[in-house]
Image: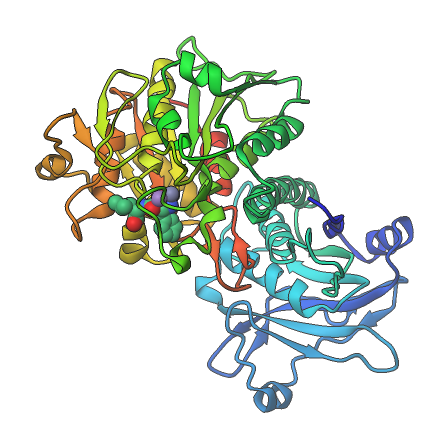
Length: 532
Ligand code: BES
Ligand code: MN
Ligand code: ZN
């Protein structure tokens, strides 16, 4: 990454006015320039979330800023407290601005509301300085152990993900943002809230890494470069064993799908394999659970000889988002104290139409000996994943999950906010679904019907790499993948839609979204084979 990316926003916690004063003194960043308060919509107009102090302390004990709701102002400015919307009331006499942060209907408030509140706030809080956001207890209406921790995590995640910017190639960075966010607890369990914020910071770092990898231009983020960066990010941890296979090794290991896709490119392919061994492992029935993550790593998808259109190619540096998500998730397993074994496997290559490229009609032999007739070289993801999943199945793990920007058909079916979820094991699928819900990442189940298996029958090989034109394209791709996982519980997430965003919206920022990182972390964190 050529230009230096600014340090992410610092997020800290203060339990009360006293701690806030200490916090302001401890770290640079200046006095509080804006104060955010959470506001619910209601029949009688917007109202402050219960427990919000008025005035809000902003510095020396005793100094405070009034955040009283001004119904006439809201009315005039058309502010109805919709989730993530904000209204800025400028401060008087150089005092801090007050940012009213819309949180919608109090009865529907959840942790996703808090993420969107955090993201909305950092966008509205100005271009520099320190911002303070008030987090009142029982915001979500939930109670019990861990609620305040999850609330702290959600606010930190929202603020950090919403303020993410990829500025690596701009000669000038003109998009200033606040330097520091202090979360002021109102009645919260401080230990829990602090722990949650710390967790949110780590998770956001993993998501930002995935976004950076995706946003880098395709001729900088080649397979070789991706392997190097992955090594920088993962290789230094004592709990991770890191390995990269070069072209020769890939051939020796019979990864015919990966080699076949790489043939048309001047850049050699790579296979990245990283294994996380927890220092404090969780034992279930005498063994430590093991989950393998497989990510599609096409650093640029031109379509190969079945060339894409100019428009279709424009976003195809995004085609390594699965690999980026897997690398991002593995990068924080140690920091988060994940207690199971995790292996990341990512086949990485360009898909290009060079003179030696695989031709429509060619047959490739995958790692596990099965053969695939390639009738469209643009259906390359399933070819490299067939090798990746074969390797994963050989490890005989408890479960395999793959993430891939696999089909345009999935985008047609589910749009940009939701990933298609396929699986061969109801328990594991339910686990991944629950993880994605906790993470605030949308997934929706799609079927693997036996009747459609014949869609990928080939005249001359075990299968072909395309289904029927215009019919169930996301499903025929997933049905092909299913043939490479043996009987290991497996989920496939088709992330072709949500891997990328066209706008800065909620926790998403333009370009790569890092979709999947948070679901993977939730999955690994909650994993043990005995409990669903
Ligand atoms: N990488 C694409 C899928 C994709 C399309 C991702 C749009 C994100 C946005 C994949 O390799 C591809 O080209 N799939 C083809 C398959 C077809 C040829 C059977 C597709 O979806 O058109
Ligand atoms: Mn393609
Ligand atoms: Zn592709």
